[in-house]
Amino acid sequence: MNHTPKATTDLLASAKTVHDRYLAGRMERETVREWATRLGLYPEPQGARVKAVADWFHANKNDDVDDEIKRKDLAVLAALIAE
Image (cartoon, rainbow, N blue to C red; front, top):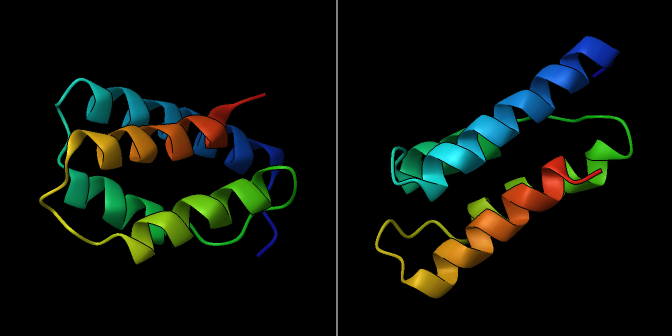
């Protein structure tokens, strides 16, 4: 998939929104998981980060999660938007 710089900018904006809403309790984990597992392929440096997010949420499908899993969810999302 050949993403434009705008697509990458949109990805980062979307990831920040998802992170912030999930952190605030305004987004359900299943919605975050669905978003994460449908991201597709991106060029580096986001490519590996997107894959890590998708892999994490694909492997951790439980809706009933404790605080430790939610912290890991948020850390994985935060790593996607880190500079």
